[in-house]
Length: 261
Image (tube, rainbow, N blue to C red):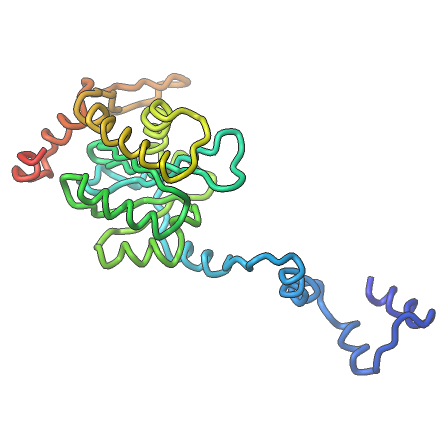
């Protein structure tokens, strides 16, 4: 529209440009028009500019892992996710629960955070390292900015934790943890809204007690194999066993770890 509007503005005395500036205005691209006033728009809105490009760069350097890429890993490789306790609204601040599920055994740990911050995620994962009887070797995140940032990903590397991520909008890539989010977190905490430090402490005590029931006394099914016969999918499951029993029977866990369990 510039080649049409500029001569009209000049003709009616609304706008006057030197010849050099006029050439620049007529030659500017649509992308440059969108890019140039960004800082002015942010200042006018009084909003801190998000480092979108930086977070995208962090996300790109983390390799993708799909559900089919696990291939029966040894204990220590976990899927990590957050469950939002925002009730019917995600506005303002609320408590999320960080869930970690060991893919090899199904062992599950849940820990609440006061808010979604990378520093808090690191502190909670440090605590999780003491709750798991074995060493954490890998963490598979989703694309949440609470994980894909300059705090969590760099922290994992010195800990020798292999970082991967699921594909965007593909929840099946984290099927293990999505199942536990519903069967454990939502069943215990429900769908209400929680916020504040005091409520976080209450949830910490609740999860500290419920982890014993989840890992030592609740025997879930585990898929053994499945095959398709025409339009029918036939599934076979292992005999129901607690996560503790599965860990004791796992051939890749040492006797020392099993004794601690």
